[in-house]
Length: 628
Image (tube, rainbow, N blue to C red; front, side, top):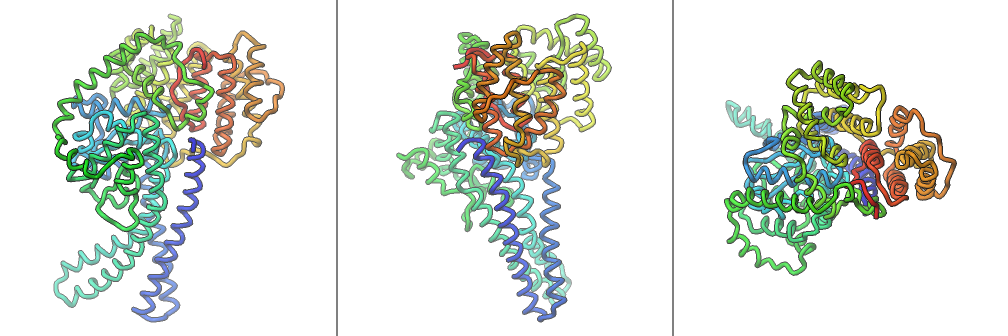
């Protein structure tokens, strides 16, 4: 099952979620009506108002909870006591976590998510939450940091990235909001029972106790349906996410050993915080035994990865676990990995390191070890001043501005004047320094730097983010025109900020078929072919024909490419409405067009990256050079 099939399945599951929710609401209303019938009598008006009030409470509670979550994944992490880790944490365990998350985000072609640690949780667990990759948050427990080595941590994070890429994360956060209305009746009953404790005498307490007990019983009907729905939605997806983690890391021992350590650890994967709402999105179950468990049995998950597993192994693993060992190991381990990555990078020409474009469409949402290695090499090759700026709350915006600074002295001074006016003199000086540090860096590293800096940028207040987008537009237009790189960077930042500010409105796919957007797809193909062969009209037409033949077998005349920037905005806005299978066909055809001459130039690469970002399709990491 590829990325687009996962997206389509997530859409179908969303529809089934609403159907199951409606059935659960009807069942709860029926139970309330039966309770009222026997407790009060068969008065039609009382039954009518009992139905209206019950339905109103459930729907209203679901709507309120959904609105509370509209801020995205960080809201969920903070509600469980999560602490966002610093951009450059001094603790080696947290630095290792940041490095792993960052490498996987770059390799997958998604923005780097916010990272949280549940400081008071000793069990081994993790989750990813959010409506879209732009507002995603990845959270791990303290036990995860202290008990897992780098390979095991990488396996857990790869599992969570599978949920980000496959659309599970969006479904999970919607599930929290929808099911809260079903669970709220049990909460009301518990509060009534609690309030009865403070009644002055038993006669005053008796009605509250009886009402509370009745509502708790009705609430457990809601709890039953809520857990049934969560189990129906999530259990099979956990097996798929485990398999995706193995494919991503090419190391089954990583996630396999992490699961074994959960079985060996006294705290397991359980959370002390109330995990009823979020149990379906955790790496492993957050509560003790319960009917309709949200996760498959731990031993079955381990056996699916390691068929030779025997439960007796857990006793040995428990004896060997030392929560202090990872803290001693992490700093030296990360330094050694960076040294090895730099050595590997020295033997590779970044301009010739590319992915097999012929199979790249099938790797969307399922990146492999090649992308992970390339991301590690790329991250290790980032000069220290650029890395510090990307991870700095203070200078992340200036780093993105520096990527747009022109080599032409006259244009550069106009751009720096804009920076000084909008951000101040210190920012202007910092942009100068960062621009100098960027001078010898390959262009293929520049858009990934934007994604590295984005977690720091997205924390700014909305007015600052809007002003920042306008500043970038001004820098891009300082010389009177916008080239393809400037267009790609500004549109990438715009879509990331837009989705982060309005996460609930970000849509991974629409309902249109490709036939309804054939004209827009044809124009987009022509633009890509033109920029792949700017001085070779015959080569452009040949690449265009190859892409169109891949798209639907029909090859029309290649449209003329002019005033492309404004037109491209309109085209991509309409193509984002395509259904998942149509997006798959379109992206595969674009990749075929780019790879037609067995070369991938920087303009093609940047255009492919921004097109996929605006279509909400994560493009695995690749670089310009010879296509295989």
